[in-house]
Length: 314
Image (tube, rainbow, N blue to C red; front, side, top):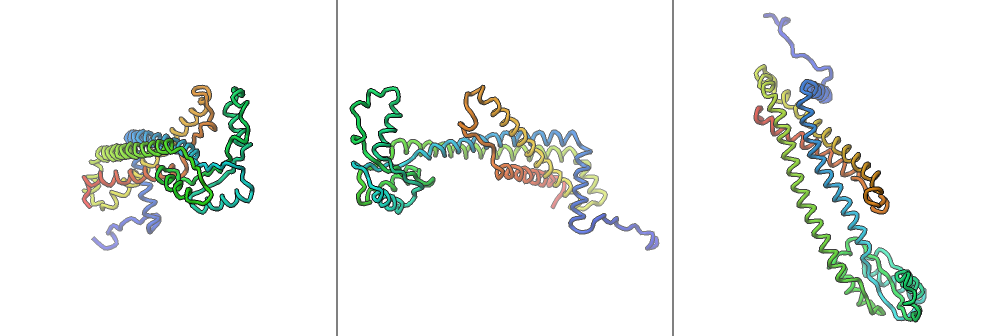
């Protein structure tokens, strides 16, 4: 056979990395179109798995938001048996801020304390007949930064605060703070534990679903190997297909969750008699949505890669 009659390797429409990626992507999309039912089942299973995971994540995010709101109520109060001048308020505020961990300080005069006391006893004004502002103490209410609201941190802060000259009685609801810190620790531990189990379950479901998809096409893989196709030529379209399945499944899960979230908020006033603003409910932030999409792509890639090892050796 002459050299002119020898068959040449067909050239790609686009050379280089971009050309190969374009070819492999088209091949992956063709595989999906040729196996629509199998891919629909795979994407549906991945979507259901990610929907469960994203629902848990949504609940956890809003629970963290609620506990963060509660933690803002943790404050330290310094009481004085007399009214402070504006200079004294500024002086004490500077000394307290020097202790560290302070996000804000408010001075509560005797008149303001009386007004608050009257609001709390609204409807029982007779109890205030013999009470005058002079019988109440003035105070400095100290708001703490987030990392200072735990039980041990706030205990150390109060100990340093009492060492400041001129500061005597200090209260911060020690028992309530300890209970709140214990509750937060339990919530975070339970969240991490349950979240870990859900992640493992999603990994298992996605990997095995993709494995079944590739197993259903083992004859195609074996035939491609017999006709001389390289490992890269066989693998890459399936890897891209797995990535697309993972991303589409995760995206559908987020869309279903968003629709359920919007429907819940639309009927929240009727069902639970509260408003979104009052409850402070939020959807998953963009960073976590991107993380779920990236997780879908990664799981699709790894699921395809590990499944292909049964038919194609590295």
